[in-house]
Image (tube, rainbow, N blue to C red; front, side, top):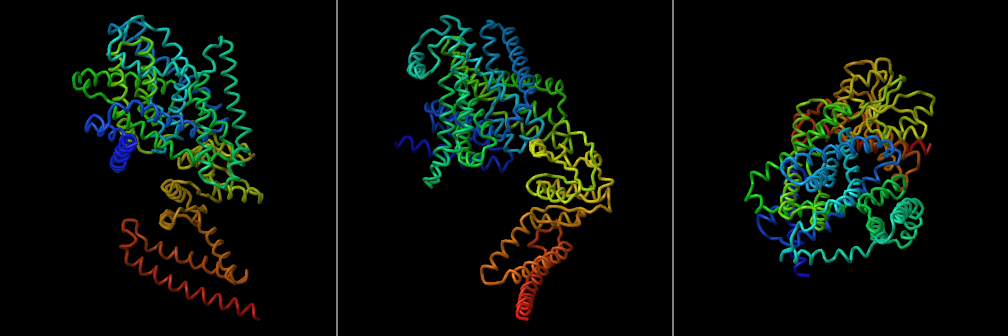
Length: 626
């Protein structure tokens, strides 16, 4: 117990120190975790042999991550990705394996070893790439979606790779040594693990049936059993029970996949997709997310702690050259595929740089290769170091992408946008929670709208419910004009991004000085930005709902409905007047608290508001008395 607590303290302390520092420096959390692992491992020597065992435990974070990604994917969206899964992902694995195999064979290795190395290094890091894409809000870009498609294909491909590797065995390749005998103690668990299998002694057709049966159980169980299970758990009225059943669901699916010889990550991803439209999706997501984050962080730390710098220092030039050669070969294949599949320029850079490393599943394949006498021990140790170093360089590749993206200027389109064939008097840019209500009210009142949104899944959801919308970035001038900016009467700006909303308002006002612009603001400062950009009506997203809540409070404190309504209306009118006055005094280059004229006038207006509210309440009471 003391040893466990001591190691836990070391890992947690290292993470708490390194990760916030890395985030402040703009390096990302993944590089922070890797640096923390290197610090407590090779540098300080605070952790040792338990790192490998801990890494196997931490790899479950990848399983949880794929489950959460599945929750975000509608099955129809997944089906729409089939071309990229088969074409883009399949070609990446095939071409990369072929090139690396040919290169290693040319360097003098037997074809079986060369092929094994090609398979191992063809994979990329699902954990690092998806975590970083999510962290940088790049998952919904064209490059992010393409990278995800390749990673998902790679996870599926691990299954046939594991089946192929034993066929490449070289009898007597690794002669038994004392170290190997010690290692066999570690692998002595494998027979026990093999017993926990539903397919080990079955013929081929039996394995197929059992495997298909397991997949059917996951699909049907996720569809039909989650509702009664969560209702039963709800009866206990204990918050921790929701967490327990969420973990049980993910762990249970992972175990079932292991029992039939499938990838746990693939199984939980499938379960997540099944539950993507479930009413318990957000509950599952909230319960699993903290565990996923901690386990992934622990996994990255174990990768950093497990780097054998002894081998690196003994032959640093060769190891670094091998690592760079791997990145260059994979980047070359990826960039070629991005051209072949006609990805936009910005997406090509993200797609190429994000997947140019080796992956964590490479550790698994190397372990199996050693057990099956496919790779010699010395070569396997070198490969492990190359994989770890390439993963360590991945955050730097993302930083390179950020620098290149900034030099490119305005974003290119994420994906081939819809051809807009409809121009109506009202353009709604952004169809999230706010835009949906506006769109429904306007349409149900008998007016036509043209809806634009850059989120493909949102547009697909709209279409499913019978509302027409177009996929495209509303801030792009050509799409805005195609939607009818030159003839529209009203433009509704309901974008999530404050910067994008302000940019769109400014452009629309410049192009059409006479158009009426209704814009959603995130907060008071955003109101001022939109006002200066040229918006006519600015609606703070929580302002009206807050006023209604305040009116309910007044009614329950003794005011009549009429009196509370008068107070609400008076507050609204005064606040609108206040915002217009303060917008004239607001200076974006001066912090609000240092803007003396702004602060002084705001205090005067607040004092006026109190007087006005008291007067309006007295008038309302007098009218009620009369």
